[in-house]
Every structure is written in C-alpha cells, then in structure tokens.
Length: 453
Image (cartoon, rainbow, N blue to C red):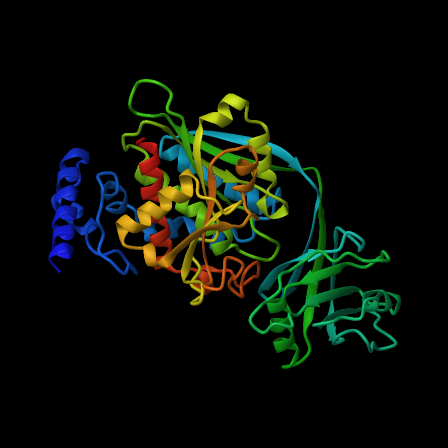
C-alpha cells in the first residue's frame, strides 16, 4: 500500500511540474494522473506522458469519424469516396499548420455495383465479366442457392445466395432472361459475416452481376418475406483511377543535428459496401487527433503523419511511399506506428496487440509496451507477435522499425470482429470510445517518447 501511495504522489508531482512547462493548468494536469479508462493500475507518468494524455480526446476524434464513416461512407480506392476523404484529411491537417503533401499513384480499375430499394441504397461489388455502366429496375426473385431456377426469368432480378451456391446459376439465370443477377455470400460460421465482392465469372454474360455482402442478403430477404420487392441495380466500371497518400509533417523544434523522424500512420480507404468505421476510419482519426495534440510539443525529431490510400487492394499506398524513399530518407525514420482497427466495440476483442512482421521487438513495439506500463494498461497489451497484413510491412521490408497496433481477440491477432469488412462496420455497431481513447493514449505517449530522443 505504501508503495502504491508513493507511486501516486510521484505521478502527481511529475504532472504538476509539467503543467508549468507546457501551460496546462494544475487541474488538467492532475486529471491526467487519474486511473485511465479501462486500466487495471493507476498511471506512473514520465515527463512526456502528461501533455499527451491530458489533452487527447476520443470524442474529438469521433467528430472526424462521423464525417469519414457516416457522411462520406465507403471509401473505395480511387473513387469519389476515397477522394472526398483525402480532401477532408488534407484540410484538417493544413488547418493544424502541418506541411501537407499529396502523393498520387495510379491504381487498377474498380467494378462497383449499387442496389436501391425505396430510399435505401447499398454499395456492392460488380463482376468485370458482367454488363457495366448500366441500370436495371425490376422485381426481385429469390432463387436460393441457384440449384432450381424458374424456366422464365424475363425482366426479373435474380438473387442467389447460400453457403454454397450452384457455380453456373448466374449463367442459367441470364440465359432465361434475367435483367440482373445478385450473388450473395453466406458464411458457414455464425460468428462471421461476409463482405461485398466483385464476382469472377467463368463465362461472361450481358447482364450486370453484383456481389452482395451477407448482411445485404439478409436485409433483402427480410423485405421479400413481407411481399414483392422492386429494386434498382447499377453496375459501374471506374477507369483511369488515381489514389493518394496524404503526408503531413512538422520539423523538430530543438536545433542541432538531424535526429530523424517518427511516423504515425493509418489507411483511410475501405472495402466495397463498408463505411469502414473501425477499418480503418478509427486509425485515421487517431492520426488526426494526435496531430492536434502533438503539433506544438517540443521534440528532437520531426513528426510525420501518413494516411495511406488503397491499402485494401494490397498495401498499394504505403508500398508506393516506401519504394520512393531514398536510402538516406529511409534511414532517417526512427519508427513507424501503423494504426489499423483501433476502436472496435466487439466484446471479445479485448486485447491490444503489438504486431511486428517478424514477431521481434523494435523501437515502436518497445515504445508502446513501455507506455502501457506507465499508463497502467499493460495487462491488456500483448506482443509483439508476428503478423503482417497491414502498412507496417513495406517499412519492415526496407529495414525500418515498424509495428501495427490493433484491438483483437484473446485467441490471437487473427480473431477479428464479425462485422469486419462488412456494411455493419459503422460507428453505431463497431466503435468503442473507450478503446479509441486507450489507443490514442498509448500511441500518443509512445510516439512522443520516441520524438523526444
């Protein structure tokens, strides 16, 4: 008990001393020393922690997420949604007085679909082997798994969706006069939902063929159970696309030798049909909120934020960025903190994972682990463990210290929420303000610690 009391007194002393240095009032500094949300232990702050955790606010980050996820919605690489998000992110960072650079790169064509029923509109994928740049409106017929189809489907939109669909049912439907075909994916695992997709067809057809997410199938069938449904289907081929990385930097504040740069990063695109609230709107708004909090703090290293375009199609934005770094530029990067899915409200995703490509510790994972111990979060934090599949990979391949930081399940970093990559990845269904606050504090404290070295 005496040791615990001594720890609290020292933490309070550090906070009050720091308040005088950076202009925090004593009440704000003292609040920073209180037990953190969801933490099992009271904090034991070092000098650099309190200006971060006293200021950072998940509710401020949520304001940005409402724009990205609720207002803009799906942000498919190179299409209007991603471009609108790029403009918004750049505007926020410029208003925070960062030097902002847009880094364009070409990307492959996208095939997207739309399904409208009354006032509801859902984004889907569409097949490159089906008709494109067309609109069809007709009554929907549910054909189950496609094994049994009516002989005459003239002027109908045919839904085919089951755990296992008959492989050539789309072709039969087209041959029997269907105006459009909706192929839905249904998971055999009740704890997993499947995303929208662009079907690959063995035989091209002259009607649009859309790939629906599982929740879209479920919602459509709920409507069909109540009576006849008329839907409008669109299929669009998006050509000659350009995606962008948004890079924002402020220099080190202390004069002297070049001590390098610390990067805090996330991707801002999403998959078809998904508003991408957690994946990765959460990581994006973490970067925007930390940009606000860290912008005027004294550092020995430059601070650089990078918001990647086109991650969902193969880490394209981050690979483009890293491949264009000169060797001296790459050597300047002391660490890259990649934030991907940092706010899920899915109950079993109660572990904050430190993920490095090879499972080894590096400057970023070590900094977050140390921050977790100082802030009292260490029982919730595990790693580093080996995992790629995010934008820390190109940095690792270039020999740059990097880690991916994410809330996932106790069973391992592969355990994701059921709404991953689905239309249900929304603020309402899949974002926890408490977990976002923990992520902000951990990455903010860790990054600032590295910036001061």
